[in-house]
Length: 401
Image (cartoon, rainbow, N blue to C red; front, side, top):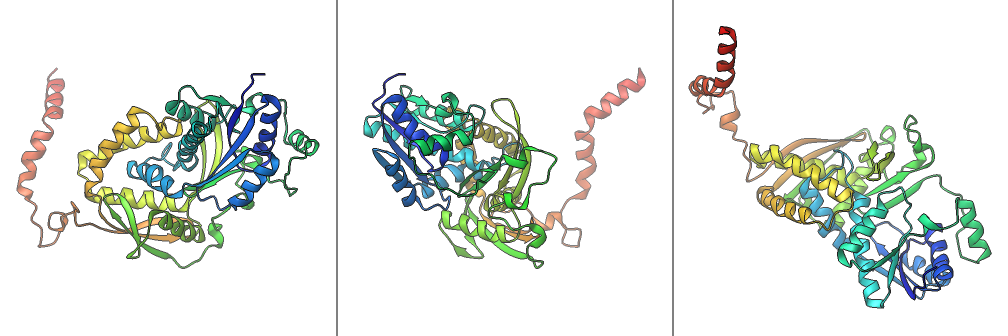
């Protein structure tokens, strides 16, 4: 085993990373420093810090990254309309490059030769962590214990923890693997691995079952300024607070549940369940405001950018020249995406019911069928004749032949 003096570990405080902390010290003879990011997962992070230190960490870093996460990762993806395979708002995928960036930063500060993570060998997160780390520091060493250690089950990890006096909480084991942050929750494993089975009620964390949600609709007016959500019901909020409010209100109305079979980067299909009330509401509202303010050619072209942007994020390529270049295109499209969208939340459904903007391209006098109509209908025959000329010519030639 290669001798490494110092390692920085992405640490959650759960069974895997607690065992990893001790395992790294034992196998590499290294000092281990832990890093835990506050991304709005709702955990008591001071408790996690104390646990890391008790498990043997040389130092335990805790950093509040909620604002940076919302502003520099979530917001660009929202402006881009980035939904992987048209549905997943990329909550976990957006968090990984930020965490990896901080891991490398701490490693450089501490003089550590390596970073470590607890990802498995068949997931997407291993790629996101490692590609990001090498994009920032190509020389950094990366250790992934779960891909190389001797344990084959959770029970073996628990036994190792007991033998080595690693503090782990004795509680009823959840059958699900859950990753949570401000932008959403990813839920997998357990009975969810059967794509035919409906997700059990206990698999959901923050959303009310639509059947049990209020029968009276909740209306929200969401205001955007150049693509940035800034207010709810005419009251301004910082971005993090705005997302938290929409998560709460959307969750109460059963909005934000996603159940999909997606294509992982490593080549397998995986059944994933997500909860993302704020993301679902904001993506729908933002897309609707763009339909009001963007010209037809830009509006029809942008989904190509949106899909590619989502793929890059999902596949761990946040730090890629293409993503940076697409941000420049997106910035131009967002100059006019200002206005308000009214949504109706009811029984798990988010429906857009109103839209307005000072830059609206909707002209009532052109659209109306009343006496206010200013559309020149006499121009239509000439337009149709020229527009249809290729088809008419083709039909004429073929009939003659």
